[in-house]
Length: 138
Image (cartoon, rainbow, N blue to C red):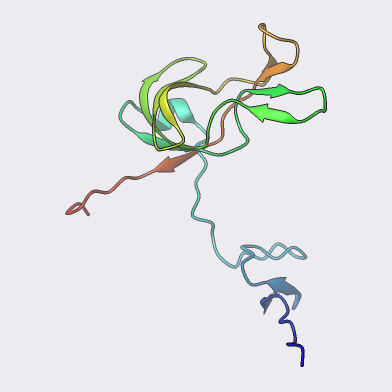
């Protein structure tokens, strides 16, 4: 006898009674907020960041190259970086993980075509603030 497949976990919206997936933060039908997402993207990076802070670079953001097939290849690896210097157009940082390591320039200006190649674009990185707590700290 074949097992019956379970459906998606659902919850009911208190505003419009729509059935929403259990992990949704907001109702797709009416916009009711079930909970606030914890991820806080850094908007004003010049004001919010200082040397010594840690940031998480979100994958598929930053400078990229467009292949002939139309596929985008991003140059910066996602992961946690240590801020070393703040510049007018970006952040000099050091990768602190297995995938992201070494010095990296995190471009934060407006998206523009690179002066190096016609198919390369400088695009701002998406950053999330990271708080690294050590043992014994509160």
